[in-house]
Amino acid sequence: MNLNFVLNDYVLIWNLLFSASISSDIQSFKQKLWKNYRHSYNELYKEEELILKDPKNYIPDDDTIFDMVKASDIYKGIREETEKYRLDLLHTWDKIKKDLNKNLKEILRFDIKLYHVLIVDKKLDVIGMKIPKSKRVNTITWGNRADSDNYTLAIINIIEHIVRKELATYKSEYKDIVDAIIELAIDNELTSRTLNKSVYLRGDSSLKYLKRQLYPYFLMYLGYSKEEILNRMMEDKIIFELDKYTFERGLATVDLKTFINFCIKNQKHILKIKELEII
Image (cartoon, rainbow, N blue to C red; front, side, top):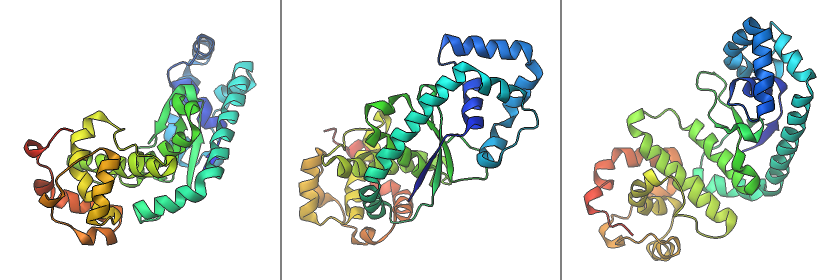
């Protein structure tokens, strides 16, 4: 897997204009543009999908709004901050990508092509799958206010959203199962390996019980023996009675997509809320 971190002026400007204002100065600037160039401003709103299909080669029919924003001092400052943000992510990726890719290959067992990560101002909180209608599947828009706290976790968060995008073809009725497995794989397992400590208790609280039931099978998928599973459950602080589970040895030889299909097919056997012990 490779990530290409890109700052594209059209993507950044569009998000500044049509996302929630990140400052009173931006809000005033947007209001002035809308008042003086109302038609152009309103027409530009429709351009998002066209921009995102091919940001590098996008050419607007009407440059008016883009030129006004580019020429402003306020945009120049935001662009500088966004470029610094892009470089922080890029440098972090370059440092950890070798180990991340090794672990990701072991966890996913399928390849993900190059992804273009279109960076916008982190204060915009534009995260993940921002292109629901676009035919281009290897692009996401990204600007997360929380990234400054830990850029390693930011990279893992980006990867998790990319994996969600790659696995977005499942029926909506299976969404919770797919989300729970992706969280086990990336937010928990990949992060635990990267930080060298278990973080299996973190994640979306609404998926807590579902993940708890999938967890034994996920350890089988990772290829742990029965003895190793006993050690892992203590390390991860997720305790279950291993003897009650059929040991599915074949799971260790499949990829994550096949594992998801296994869990969906066997969900009546796997998902037993009434028998779940809350640890």
